[in-house]
Length: 116
Length: 115
Image 1: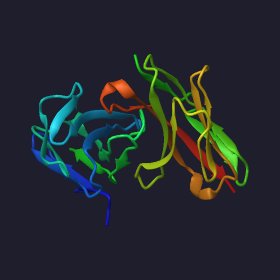
Image 2: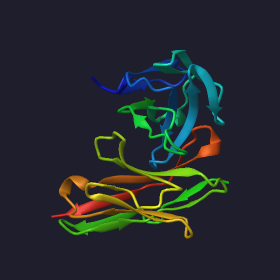
Image 3: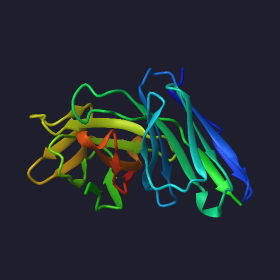
């Protein structure tokens, strides 16, 4: 009964390949996110979707394309992988906050992408 | 500009002692939430505690408490009676109300509990 599940947990691939990471949440949350955590542990938002609509799109190369078929799923597709894409990618979800700023993020376990 | 600062890259604490992890923030938004997350070596991100900017009292969750000083723009995490399982990275985060669910994370503090 995992709340936010993402697959695969580990992904090792060659430069230039295309790969996808899938994310599903069973919490009934309205908003889903993708975060990237680099080798220095810094967490940076990439995308945010609210009810399948893109609401945050940070400065991310257009090789990264999120897709939200429904509000419980947010997948991340990456084209033409580069060495610098190696990182841990976290999916997260949150509900409309009951009070200002109270949108607690629930994270998936992370997907470690290694580009060789 | 929104910013979260954690000035302690690494901290050590003796088991059963209390420890304070520092966090300062900067925002012009009058309404925001402050959060702490724990990331153990296994990698998952675990929500610990939340403080709203309009909350009058400091938040507490079991052994965790958030020392919120609004005028100083600080939101320090206090862990009481440290346990070996508390060894992890700790991230402070802020979510201003008017930024469309945007979260801003600090660079993290690595806490090591010594037996």
